[in-house]
Length: 107
Length: 121
Picture 1 (cartoon, each protein chain N blue to C red):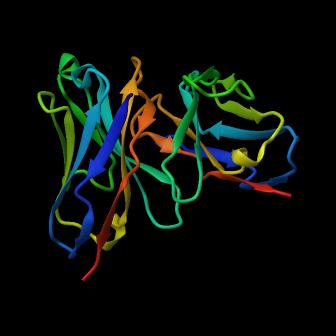
Picture 2 (tube, rainbow over the protein chains, first blue to last red):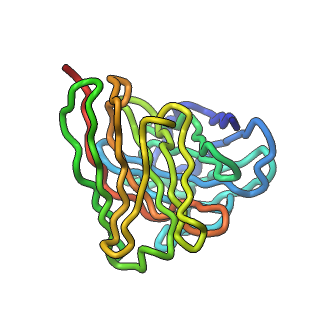
């Protein structure tokens, strides 16, 4: 199975900040990487697929980059609604696997 | 509006069975693969399995933790995907989500709100 490692596991930031979350795959996955946002008690929301393509309706403040084994999610100009947990997931092969999540908190 | 609604969750004793449904609307259900995921209390997301579209043989893949116990099926005439869960264990306690998958590599774009399964005596 492909292991996905996210860092950091938690992150404190202020409204207006720009933050980045990294995700590393244990083997190459091309660009078959997705990012999800989850708020407490809610279903995940798809943000990015193919490492850098925004899902429909997702604001351009979210951006993704990377290929192979190293990927980054960047969120610019943080707003209160952006404070949530973020997960990366590889869909290059089965079983699909997720990073452990990054909890983004308000400083 | 594209929508997925899970149902069928509840409290069940260890060793018993439960069938979850994922009812789709707002899109041509038969054109898409459908996946199931779960999230145990306070834990991260876990992929459970997938069923491809009939155009791709309606074949299935499963996580090792559920293989042989869980079965995914689909009824395209009703726009419903099912997750049949047998021989349930306490560690199957989770919120279960279904997703619509797209693309040749099947990435998720739409999630349901989830249904809660609690396995306890």
